[in-house]
Image (cartoon, rainbow, N blue to C red; front, side, top):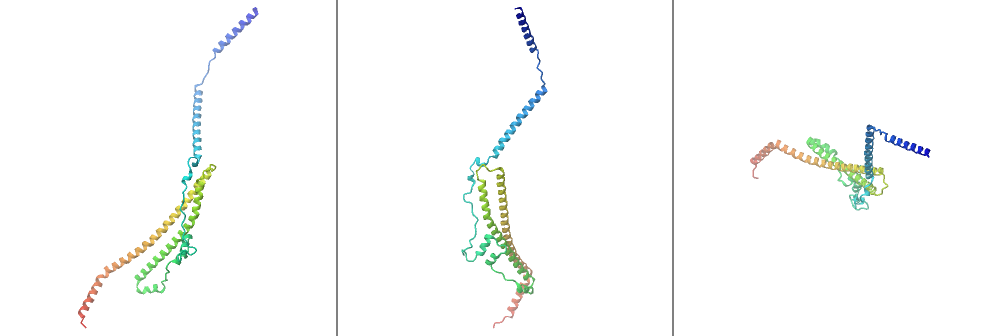
Length: 269
């Protein structure tokens, strides 16, 4: 009995000493390490938010427009077709060769030659103008040069128009195929396919700009020929005016003198 009491007392004393030791521990902290961990945790949270926002934006950019709108509304119902001139089966009696040149091009000007009024070669007649004077020769040479420029311009413009019209039908088929690929709402198209579509559209746009410049150049050539013809007419009129001013007084005096002599020497028959 006494032994059991001794064991109990010892146990109580041990527990008391253990409790006093527990209350006697001190917590050790490092403010610098704690601040560093807080900063690192804050930066990680900001990086996570930024990456999440970028992923959401890329996901939205990757979605095709067809997922948000119906692309069929951008399709032209009836795009205009390239017009061609009828020349087969004798629809026209005289202009068929030139119509064929306007449809397919004519680099040599054969079609234009068949519908244009033929020109006679100057030959000996032009050489004989040397006896009439240099002014007459220069006048005829300027008119012949205008005809040469007009023929060259018409032949070149006809060839360009025919080639553009012929290539325009193939270009129209390419545009139709591009429109089909662009308006396709299938989500299986990759980013590379979309970029290829943009490249094709840029190429067609460049070809159309080139064709537009060729048509403008042909129009400018026609205007240049018209301006030369107008300039030649004005130059001829100015030359006649200058000639009248230069020798008009002498011619008038000679005419008056001749008339006076005729009146003085005139007798009634």
